[in-house]
Each structure stands twice: as C-alpha cells, then as structure tokens.
Length: 262
Ligand code: MG
Image: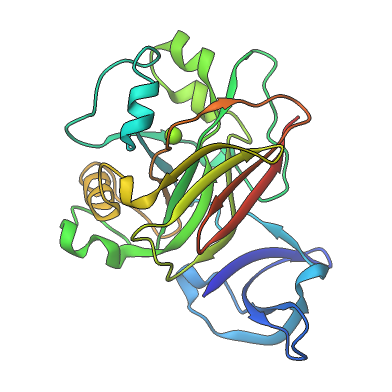
C-alpha cells in the first residue's frame, strides 16, 4: 500500500493510492486520519492524483534518527573527510523535525554554507512505540518506508566537528513521495540523480547494518514514537547541490522524491 499525505482545496488529509475506478490513471482514496495512529478507515472520497499537492508523508512527531557510514563504498569516499573506517556498530545522529519538507518543496542552501551536498537514502517510518526492542522483533515496529535526502552542509559538518548544525537546517530532510507499507527491500536499488544525471547508486542488500539492527540499536538509546523516521545511510557518490538544480532520490518499489534547490 502506498500512503500519501496531501493538500486539496486548502485541507490536509491522508490517503492511499489506488487505480482510478475508470481505469485511467491514479486516484487517492482519502483516509479518516493519519493511518500511522488511526488505521485505514476511509472517508469514501476519491480524488484524482493530479488534483492534489503531495506533502511529506509524515511529519516526525519527535525526531529523525539517521545512520552514518552504512554503505562500504561511502565509508571509503568519506575517509579523508569525516575519517575512520567501517564502524563496529551503527553510528547514529539526529536531525530536527523542522528540517522535514515534502516532494516538490525547495531545498534552501543556507547563505553561510558553500558546500551543500545530497545524500539519497532509504527511510523507515516507525509505527508503534519501541524501546529496547530485540532485533528479531524490530521490523514489527515499522509502519513503512519512504525516500529521503539527508542534505548536508559538509563544510559546517567538518567545521563544527559534530553534525547537528550541518545536517539540521530547515529543508535539509526531504521525505516522500509516499510511504510504501510493504516493499521488497531485499535488494532494492537506491539512486540519486541531479538534473537527470546519476550521482549515487546503491542497493539495500549493501547496507552494513540491517534495517532490523538499526531499529533495535536506535531503540536502545531513544524511545521511538509512531511517526518517527529513521534514515538508513547513503551509498557513495555524494556531491554538491547548486541553486537551480533538481535532485531526485528514487528507490525501487517506493517512488521518486524530487526537490528543486534554491
Ligand atoms: Mg546520511
């Protein structure tokens, strides 16, 4: 199921994508409320996909947890930048929920950074309160999966020596376009393109720490709440975003997250 959050006629609603009843295109079946907390009861209303504006499919209630250095080829390319080799356990940090934007929203390069970079990533959305969950149960706490861009002011990340400011600016966490509740992530392609040119390409089978391990590990540190989001790391090929660029993160089975850069 593909879950969306959208705006139509000034109102914000949740929905699921469905084939149009007349067989022509995609429609949105409107839900009564946020399915992460309220389930999938519908209002009965159907809208044409073209008639709505998609928003970030979730606004994290409390936090966006991120995993750094989770693809070996990216660890290699960052050696001279953030240092170190493959970590022996997940390296986690947070982005504020104020950094979240939706599909089509502009990533705004802050005036105080000369080096804003893309990091295309698979994100998972927490569906139930999780604290100290064992790895074998961890995926039961996941509602679904979406595309994310862990936008980073690399110069500020390096200058500060820790990552909060460089990763936390407003607009630095595009999410969307949908939450897929049941994708096949055994070996899904994760691609980032800038102005149509492929910059990053990886597969979920290359993750150093598995999705279950990441959820279990993060839940040892933080109580994960429904609607919290976890970004799972980026493959090699991170690079500059300039004003006027369009950046896309595509994950097989989920969709394409597209954002302009200002
Ligand atoms: Mg990242």
